[in-house]
Image (cartoon, rainbow, N blue to C red):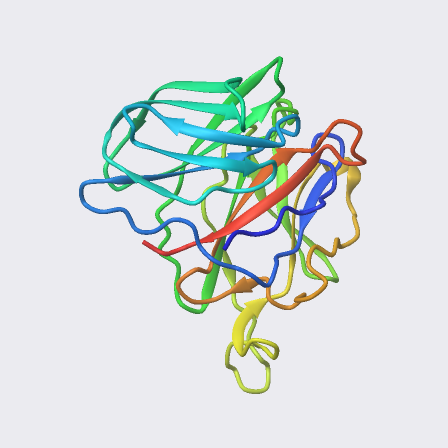
Length: 261
């Protein structure tokens, strides 16, 4: 199950923030010794829905709404042309040529930009090896409006803001470890009383320093305590994408959990 898209705050001239949703899940399954995996994000505000197609009949993912993440395709190694078309039409939004898939690698391709200036942003994802009582977050910049200045990223735990690093525009931070809170009385990992699972209740952000501090944004009012689970899918991948023209904030983060290696 994918994260819902989050109404986040600004990036280039402000910040983008999110809290997680209760329906956490994973997208990448482990690739095999002879395949790689690939998924797609519609990060183009002007494209309500996109169809993604790989050459050589390698696979497709259709009707991917803006701000959402596709399921994963397992494909053989090789060089592909990838096309994103407006759903229900023959109109090509963006094309990625000579995209090389290697054995054992995970890829995310984000369609972004506008109809006049479309593009793909491609990420080769990390192979996570996160400890059971820990978690990791990896921030990606897939915003066509992010400019050229490094973007601070971090967390807000309700009382303080902690910068974890920066993203080079068009790049990713790589896996940043997060520690599991410990109950001071028992010395054991803190447990979410709603799910009986260990979790961290924090807000994630990407922002310009001029706009800090900021207030929390509530993304999922029905399950506010289930943000970072710990277990097989405790690696949070966050993608900064543009928001539609006229939005109060030009950036938002969307996220998904992935397995360990």
